[in-house]
Length: 272
Image 1 (cartoon, rainbow, N blue to C red):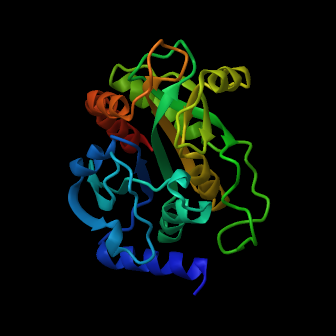
Image 2: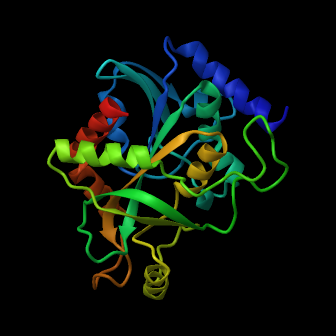
């Protein structure tokens, strides 16, 4: 069986487990998976149960697909993602997005924990992604193109939907939380960046840095899915503050903003 058939088999499995196909899905980044536990009438599927679905082995990534309701609307939440730095190729990293697309999802909210490059950001800020820079070193569309997913050369002039970014701003105002906007740069990882790399990234226009999101956003746009990206600025990047970087700090910050994050997502879902 080929890649498309594997994706279809996984989508068929998920479809067979749920009553209503969601039109909106959310990928939950490091330490942000708690949102999945707030869904009503939830059907929870461990990644290991879904055919061909890759497992995430990263601390802070739980590893389950939850389909349930928020304010009466059925959505899908992916608690955990796999990353290129774990040794996966980009087709594997974007497998979940492909499944969601074949399932019938029309809107995808990608969230992540990111390092703050823009010195105007505070730790714990939630940043709306306006655009991205791909420095991962490859692209999920490399190789033969499968027209069943999308065209050979997809347009990337508006990866992150202007409409959904406006909705995120409205949602932020509704909970009294103005949201900064910025450019997210995706790197391979898993080591954190050096201070010299952060100076370089700031020079080329990046506001936040992380190790995910970019491949998923490209794959989603390839399939015509509307994308919103939200970064939780869990730490200031190397060289911004005189202290070393630590994954535990990332998890602690994500935990601290959990309430605001869940509130924001609920407001976005109500308006999208």
